[in-house]
Length: 422
Image (cartoon, rainbow, N blue to C red):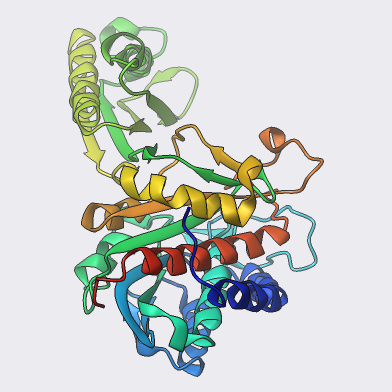
């Protein structure tokens, strides 16, 4: 059992409970003022000011555009542990009925859009601010160093710009000092409040996208033999690509998904157009399958187009890697999870096709990512509006559980690794 010595545990619980309302207030403020990736100027400003007031060490701003990194050096020697929270919202118009509902509008991809914390990053930022305040008030009892990473642009950027966790790493967010381990969490509607979801190994999928341009030859719709029909060709490409998972991928090894999200072409009903464009995404949990599907999407589109006397240009964009929880560290954390939430509320969750750029941190150092339930008791979490929905709703008592979880993981890890100097 992971069990730190008293009085640290009792003090930690008391301080966490005292911070709950402050964390909720921060969350509501961030929720009412969401900012998209690399635009989190207001959010990161509030975070940085808070960390400076707490007296944290080396508060760095502007990391990966708008990120904030700070450290807290404890009063006793020990390891360095990193905690990460993401800060950005989504281009979603909020429909949830809450008094702090977002009314903000901004630009995304050249269009004016609503903006909403539809994925709960407002919760993550507020929780980590609370953890920082908790440990700042008991610094002398901290055995080692805690690194706080507030990350922008987890939801991605237009035109596949570099940003988020990858850019934070490039800009040395994990250096000086380099953490021995990193923990992160994500609120999720598919668990009820009070539940913690965990999974050793692959937990969230890689997130790759593709774009296909099918070139035909325009002609009158009444005389298709005089042209080359890119619409019919596109239909065959869509259907043919569906066999990649159903017939060519070993889904007994790992699951995979190939999905088309857009198809565009043509101007009127009696003209066969020159070209059709398609786009989609594919999700995998294995790097070998990831590369296989990428190659086969291109081969399938090109060869089907050729058979239809058309041509196809295929472009793929690598997204986030598979989110892989360090197995040893995940299993080590289980007693902590059970102590914080109770055995019955610790849930071994299935893999999810959603992606997370926390995966970049895990490629550098051992890391574990957890899910925190935020659907109220008495509601079927399986039917709750999902993350990214305009109706996404957070049951705010779940924030205290997230705060307690990160705090307990810190003191347990430091107690378990006393020989590692920060």
